[in-house]
Length: 262
Ligand SMILES: C[S@@+](CC[C@H](N)C(=O)[O-])C[C@H]1O[C@@H](n2cnc3c(N)ncnc32)[C@H](O)[C@@H]1O
Image (cartoon, rainbow, N blue to C red; front, side):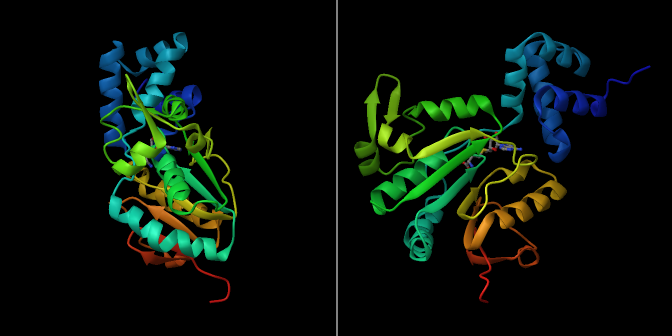
């Protein structure tokens, strides 16, 4: 008889959604799946997969529920100061346009913070900003560029005034900033990476991954950078074997790909 336990569910969930639970920490994922099953009224994994088969909305909300989309504009402001005052000026000395990738961009706060920063403090400097996430619902929200009053709290008031329009539901980001970011769906564990990048942001994503998935991922990020390029990670994260993958610490939470001439 077929066993409809965890391993079965992992396989089915992958076939249905493309989301590979094997790469994520199991206890966290189990908790989230159990709470999702209660919400949609599924009594077990089999029931949940049946629901996903019948209803596209359930399938999409399952992915939405598994991904943790919390984000903020200029999250950890001290790091953004280092980015503005030290990292970006150096990258621009090397070459332009600079190519930036926000990987795991959630609802857009991170790539839009980059676009705001570039537009305000480095006007006229050419930049491309790619922003990707596995969660289609989060990406749709990102593309609207509309945020609640609470969501824009982290934005310095002069930037909020200059680059957003207030309406009845909150704040809408100006088209000029919106156009600077190209959003797309991408699974960083499976899909191919862009290459020759100057700056990659992958923040507050790997905390949910197994050690194995995390190590593989950092290696792929290192390869995707140009020599001298920078990887910017989250404020609870650290790359222990950075040297082994060709990265060196440049500032707290910033790693630089070693230059060829070193
Ligand atoms: C907590 S948010 C972080 C958002 C933003 N980087 C920040 O620091 O504010 C984590 C994001 O990672 C995304 N994510 C999780 N697994 C992913 C994967 N395999 N590929 C791409 N994105 C993924 C989730 O959908 C979620 O939007």
